[in-house]
Length: 183
Image (cartoon, rainbow, N blue to C red; front, side, top):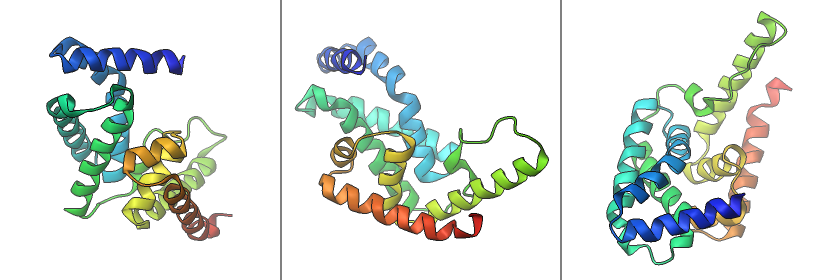
C-alpha cells in the first residue's frame, strides 16, 4: 500500500509540475496533516504551526518545477516544513511544551490519579523535548512520532543516516535522564 501511495505521489508530482493545480491539491490533502504535525511538534504553538505549514506548502508549490526527482517529493516537502519550522522556532521562545505531544493525550483511564500522573509525565516529556537542541528534537520527532526511517529522516534534514542515528541516540539519552524522576 505504501508503494502504491508513493507511485501515486510520483504521478501527481509530475502532473503538478506541468501546471495541474488539482494534482498538487491532492498532494496537499495527502500530506497536510503530517506537515502540520511536524511544524506543531517543532514550534509548540498551533497558530505558528498552521502558518508555517501553510507557508511550506506554498513554497513547495512555487519550487515544484525545481524538484529534480518526483520520487523524492515526500522527503523534499518534509524538509521544507522542517527548515521553516526550525527557522520560526529560532525566531521566538516557546511558551508551553504541552502541544508537542498533541494527539498523545491519554484516553479514558482508570481514574483521576492516572490522568494526573499521565499529564505530568506528558508535560515532563514535552519540556524535555524542548530542552533538546533543535536538530536532535527534529530527528527524534520524525523517528518516534512520525515513524520515518533513518534514511527518510536523513533525506529530510539533509544529513547522513549516521548523523541521524547519533542525533536520535543523544536525544534518547537526554530524555532518559530528564525523565528519571518518572521511573
